[in-house]
Length: 533
Length: 81
View 1 (cartoon, chains in turn yellow, brown):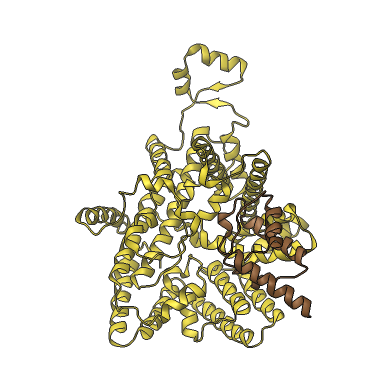
View 2: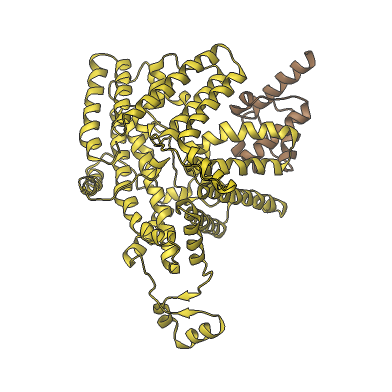
């Protein structure tokens, strides 16, 4: 079931909400959470019933083994449990990739297995790895299997995150003084859900047209005009952001509707003025997972044998490669991870250089032109990296990059020729090897260009959903760190925040109605990008 | 109380001339103390005091004060053991 589908919004959600609060009021809070677990299993099974068995086996095995680990704190057992989980995701997600790579390297022709990727496996495997490591590290565990299932399987975050940690969810289930219905949380939930839905079905899905049009051509090896390539790249960055942050908003909103506070996943990543900052704002729960469970342990362990800045950077690079691989079983994703790794390394080295030159990086006192420069560099580099993330094949990515940088055809549109004037045109033709001619845009139209420009300005300036709710939330949003509080831009837009007024209600209603036109339209093209993970 | 020795190690690793490091100081407050530097700091502290941390011990350190207490505990253990 997809959050933006009719069956979810008009059937599943209302039924589950009503039954949840009924059980919560007339039976017990405990029973209501147990009921949510059952509903979540139904939610999961709705897509492909056989894999419900797989996920139940995974949960049961992990829970039982974690209990053994809790009683006998044994590193080898921990390693075994982690290996079993990795083995499971390794088979379902990476087996065919592994075979294909072997085939390519050794010249064999081993056929692929027919494997259907279980929905959400990347998320629920990693969430369980986090749980078992925490059991080892802290000796804290979920006392009851139903609690464990709730944290792992709550339908709001089961399929595509946020990746939750037990220590942030479990206490919420056992708080004695929670009311039957937290009206403020419920209101927030609705707002988050409406924002997320709009971001997904109106914004993300509409960016998809330009993206698909250009990338499909590039995948075939046909070159595309320079403007098309850039517009498609920017469109994809925006599509991916609105798709995934929209999904995360909906997830947080659904959680709040049930009085559960899920951690935030995005915090205006396209406002970042450095790549380092970008990764603190993009897919935050994933970054947190990799930092706590891969980067830190690996860096500390390897830091004993080999210390120094280089060691830290190498571990960082390896971590980013694995983050790339986690996103998809394919070399384009690993390459994307590698690119992000290189960008981060350059960022760290740049900060080092700045310190040596006497102008150290200080986020509290940075010069506006430098921040603007940092913002533009970051945004462009991230966009360029998204090209290889989106391209299904290396060929497609290369075609896109060549187009974006005039590699083999220095062709400029005929319209531009008229604009610069005859003499400039002739000069560029004769002395710089420019060919004039062709349309400015072959695969995208000017409306899509305008859409991109407007939305880039929007994500760079406007507050995000969480900031929009900050005066109303009263502590109901998890995961805002010390660093994120310092967002000077948000001061300018502080008038834009949620208040339970008629004007805001009308605004939300408009967003909702617009979204419904897409939800109710069976022919509307919609794909949740992160479902493939 | 943050010992001079610990403070020196931290400042040296972060290549800072001086910074007021207190019990309640946290990494984001100190220039250049990001997650990359954090690992360097921990490794340097291990070397300076001749101790070894487990990931479990360091992963949840809330501030420098907790790091100091952890170091004190481990150096006492090494002295006695």
